[in-house]
Length: 71
Image (cartoon, rainbow, N blue to C red; front, top):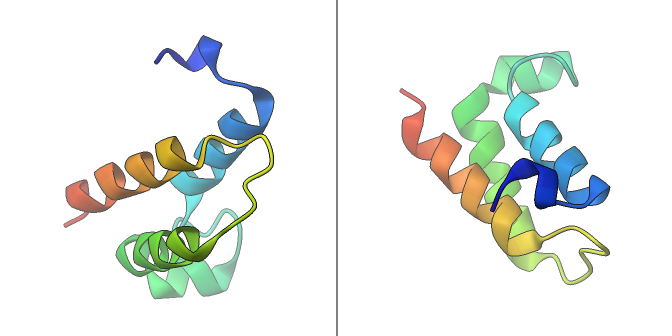
């Protein structure tokens, strides 16, 4: 799926996921590190029942992909 085909809510969620652990959202996240933040996101996402207009499956897939690339 191309980025242009995604709705705004999903695009915003993907942007958020990509910034996890970078310090852009919080210094706590920067201290925890990208790996821990992505793990936490995935754990929480698997429990999430209301995604609104966000494509939850895609969000989890992207978070998992990013996690697999973190050293």
